[in-house]
Structures are given as structure tokens and as C-alpha cells.
Length: 527
Ligand code: UCC
Ligand code: FAD
Image (cartoon, rainbow, N blue to C red; front, side, top):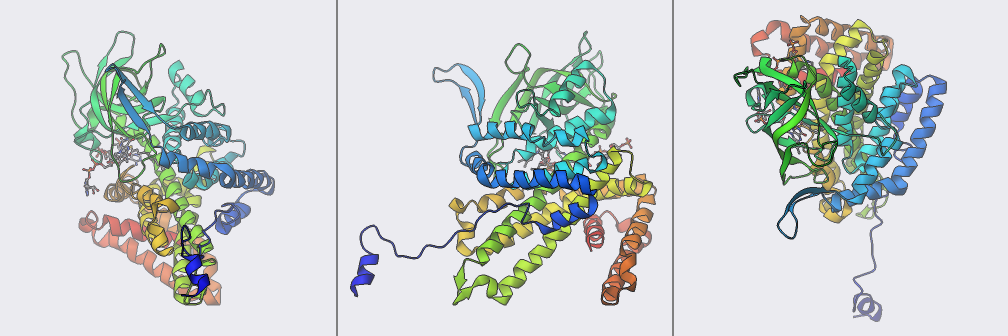
């Protein structure tokens, strides 16, 4: 052996090559599609303010927030049921980083911006662009934030004026970390998460003071440390009888802790052992007389909790697109650092082609997401047209199901772009794949949302399909006369006609084809 070779592999030395790792840069600056969309859509004076805040927030994410998210992954929540001396304590322990996420979410206005409405119809774009930057570095704190936003939206939409709801609302949209509350959403029971009406056994017993006492078992509670929850139960009559099915379900509001301290007559039975989302305290809960307030009319629980569902489904899409963007940006950075076969991997045409095709998918999903968010902002500010109102209803489930599935595929491909390192836990990369795998499952599975798309079509007497048709024609109008876009234009219009004809020709096959149909709606809209 030569002396230099033996020296570099002796004792504690393990060779001299160390790969430069991928680097997380300011994700706002790295996202040209987002930047361009905001520049194009927001009025100049709004853009300047939003741009400044997003730039600063993007810096803060790199400087310290991303580190906090790593701590949330490394120190998952624990449920301590008994103390060392056998006394039942039921304490949910969360790490400091998780608590810091709560505080910074309030300070940064991650829910508040959407309700302060300082920028009118553009407020939601601002709020959700911020959440989009935050999501992959949030240690999944965006999960409780999604449900908090959903709860605030439900109280606002239903115009609830009972002091309990007014007080809760002011906390959900607060920027003061000490005052800020988060919400959970307890819908799923053992017998059914999709078929909520078939699965809900929880019973609500009316009390003389107008409140109710809930008894039941909630099978999944993602944000168990939340301050409040919206849930469903069946109201018992004086004989203790309940109405089965959807018409028997009513929406309730509850606070997880009693004003005098201690849990509100509920028991955290156990934390779930999960493939991913380990940062989240997902528990099974026993409701044993939980004090609750009726939020919806009796029997209108499913319809009214849909206000929350449509918000959380948009948040789901934010997490999906943001995860895709994160892995792709890291993979792109890595491709300028990793050498194989004598050159940087970015210079291998096939690797470049794979990254470019992922880029196309991510940009398409992002533009779809931003368009839905803009409609949400318009709806809330009385600016939406009838077409936009109809399309918002049909395309929200499409957005959720499409981006969630895309996220699993794109993140999986993204991991491969790091070779073996993509599989190594201490790179922080595998956690992204684990966490996106939940996105197609919760908040309505892909099948359930495909059927929801059909529901929205039949509820509108197919008017929404006409709106969709005209919307696509309008968006593509310009391309008609541009020479190099003519072929693409013809393809889009051809696909549009095929999809819509399918509904007319095959009404009996719509259910079985619902998923492909929803995908086609997404693809045509994106192109
Ligand atoms: O998973 C959960 C939390 C996870 C953590 C949060 C993550 C947030 C993202 C974070 C990212 C990091 S909570 C559990 C979520 N569960 C679901 O999503 C349930 C899935 N199942 C469905 O969506 C089903 O389609 C059901 C439950 C809605 C179907 O029930 P029914 O009994 O068959 O309902 P009907 O009869 O079709 O509808 C009842 C009423 C109708 O209104 P009316 O009576 O006025 O005709 C429907 O039009 O509800 C209305 N409705 C809707 N309205 C149903 N769905 C909708 C909707 N999407 N929008 C508006
Ligand atoms: P099922 O409804 O049993 O579905 C099983 C399969 O059947 C699915 O593939 C589904 O698509 C399919 N299917 C069902 N019905 C139909 C149909 N009509 N047509 C075609 N296919 C159908 N829930 C809450 O309420 N709050 C929470 O905080 C919460 N947090 C969660 C956290 C995690 C990590 C997970 C994994 C789940 C959480 N859930 C929560 C539950 C989640 O919302 C449900 O698991 C989900 O809605 C699916 O319900 P299910 O598990 O009962 O599946």
C-alpha cells in the first residue's frame, strides 16, 4: 500500500470524500411559479406588502423554524397515563418545539390573516401562501391550524352568536400566542370514517342549562392538545332514543378542558402508532359526559360540518403541493452537488428529464391550488361570480384528491433522486414520504371525494359542468390564435369535450368511473 492510502483509512479515518448535502434556501425565492402568480394577481400595493412578509418568513423558516420541525419529529408526543406511583394522570406531553410552533403560528397570523381580511379578496392568497411556505417545516403544526381555520370558518359561516362561540372565534383568529386556541375535528368512529352517518354512535343528552353531555368513542383525534373540537353526535330524546342515519347527526362544539382545570369528562385512551405524522398527538378518545354546545340545527350535522371539511381539504392540498415543492427543490439543489460517471447528475439528460417532469407536475398542482384559494377569497368578500361559486364547490374535492395522490407519487420519485441517501432517516427525507401518505386518506379518501364531485354535480343539476366548460373555453381563448399553441389548444378542447360527453352518455357508469372522471377534470383544468 502507498503511505497516503493507508493513512487515510487508518484509525478513526473513514476515507476523505464527504458528499455536500442539499441545502434548504429561502423557499419563497426558490418558487418562481408562486412569485409570478402573486405578482400577476395581487394589486401592486398589496403585492409589495405580501412580498415583504413572505420574504422575511421564508428567511425565518431557513434560519430556525425548520430546525424546530426536526425536533417535533425527533421528540414525538407521549401520553402519560399513570404517574410513577400508580395515580392516573392522563397527561399529554409535547416537546418545546411543538409549543413554539403554536406561538409562532399565532404571531405570524397563519389563521388570523384569513379573517382580518386586510387585503380583501387577496387575504386568503396571502395567508395560504404563507402556510404553503411553512407546511414542510412546521412539524405538522399545519394540521391543527387547518382544523382551527375550519372551525373559525364554520362559526363565521353559520353566523353563530352564542357568547361561547363568539369567544371561541376571537381566540381561533388571534395573533396573541397566549390567547390563541386551536381546534380539533372529531368525526371518525370505529365503524366509519367515510360513512360517518353509518358509523356515529356518540349520543348527546340535553341538559337543563341548554348544554349537552356527550357519550361515545372517537377513533381518531389528530390534534388532541387542541383547545376545542367540532364533533358529531345523535341527540337522545326523553326516552333515550336517537335517529339513525345522516338525519340523526348534529354538530357540537366542545372545549377539551374545563374552566376549573382538568379534562372535560373525556379520556385519552391511547395514542395511535402510525406510519407517519408521528409529530401529531393522534389519540383515541372516550367521551364520558363531555359538556358540549349544539352548533348546527338538529339533524344538520353533516351538512354544517362540511363548512369545516371544505377548508381542511384546501389545507390538505397546501400540504400536498408544499411537500412536492420541498422534495423537488432539495433534489434540484442536490443535482448540482452530486457527481456520478464523471459529471454532476444535473448534466445527465435522463436525470434532468425526470426533475423537469416533476417540476411540471408541481407547477400544475400549485396553480390549481392558488386558483381555488383565490376563489375562496373572492367568495368571502362578495366578489365571486356565479361560475366561480359553482366551480369552487366542485373543484375543491378534485383539488384535494388530485394533489394528495400526486404528492405520494412525486415525493416517492423525489426520494429516488437522492439515491440511497433518500432512504436514510438522518437526512430527514423519508419522513416527507411517510407524512404525505396520509394526505389521500384523511379528510375524505380519494374514492369518497370522487363521489363528492358527483354529489356536487347532481346538486347543481349539472350547471357546474356548464360553468366548467365555459371557464376552460375562456381560459384557453388566447391560445386558439397563437400558432405554436394551436395543437395543444385542440388537445385540451378535445379532452374537455370527451370528459363532458362521458357524463351525458354514461350516467350509469359514473360511480365506477368517478375517480378517473375527477382526475380528468383536474388534468384539463391544470393544462
Ligand atoms: O380526517 C380528519 C382530520 C384529519 C386531520 C386534519 C388534516 C387537515 C389537513 C392538514 C394538512 C397537514 S377529520 C375526518 C374527515 N372525514 C371526512 O372527510 C368524511 C368523509 N366522508 C364524506 O365526506 C362523506 O361524503 C359524507 C360523510 C359527507 C357522506 O355522508 P352522507 O350521510 O352520505 O351525506 P349526504 O346525505 O350525501 O349529505 C348530507 C348533507 C347534504 O346536504 P343537504 O342535506 O342540504 O342536501 C350534502 O349536500 O351534507 C352535504 N354535503 C356537503 N356539502 C356533504 N358533503 C358536502 C361537501 N363536501 N360540501 C358541501
Ligand atoms: P373506510 O371508510 O372504512 O374506508 C376503507 C376503504 O373503502 C377506503 O379505501 C375508502 O375509499 C373505501 N370506501 C368507503 N366507502 C366507499 C364508497 N362508498 N365507494 C367507494 N369506496 C369506498 N378522523 C377524524 O374525525 N378526526 C381526526 O382528527 C382524524 N385524524 C386522523 C389522523 C390519521 C393519521 C389518520 C390515518 C386518520 C385520521 N382520521 C381522523 C380518520 C380519517 O378521516 C378516516 O380514516 C378516513 O376518513 C377514512 O375512514 P375509515 O378509516 O373508516 O375508512
